[in-house]
Image 1 (cartoon, rainbow, N blue to C red):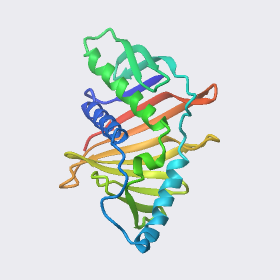
Image 2: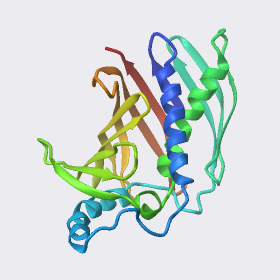
Image 3: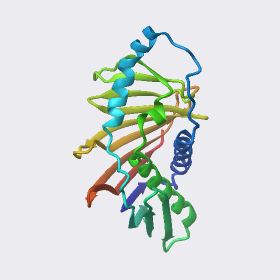
Length: 246
């Protein structure tokens, strides 16, 4: 596995954003399930909301994920950052936990920070490969359409998740995700895909960080991925991260 990062300074936003996204998603996965919605709705409202929810569910279910038989893997990992080259070992266990060990280089750059960067990136990939039923993550929330964009993508707002989450869906794919996490608004645009028989994989995406109050762009991260089929599973084998500051 190769991870390529290009920037003048170690990308601290990658570290912070990675941790924030992981904690956010883990927090959702650990939410207790309740039996009934807090707000009662009439059948007419429920019918009106069924269409956008089903559109989003369909795109969500078409994502490529690993099944319950996923055996885990062990991989050598290399990270090239400016002129520095780091090496180590990554393990993804069958329970989808991630271990990173032996990150080292010939320079005096903080190897612990690089280890955390590598772990964050692999964990985010693993989270997207985890197969979680739609109802567990989104079943208690309602969805409403807010129109279409200039490409015909359907804009969908998720109501009830406390993160101001809204999405764009086009052709059974989620092509944009928007969330507000504390003092940062995050937009992820999916720009390129590969299509295994089992579902779609995002191969190119742009993450934009904004001030949620002023909409000022703080940073952009252009990420390009390569996946290789190992056995019956597609594994991330290369990630190139280019950080762009205004």
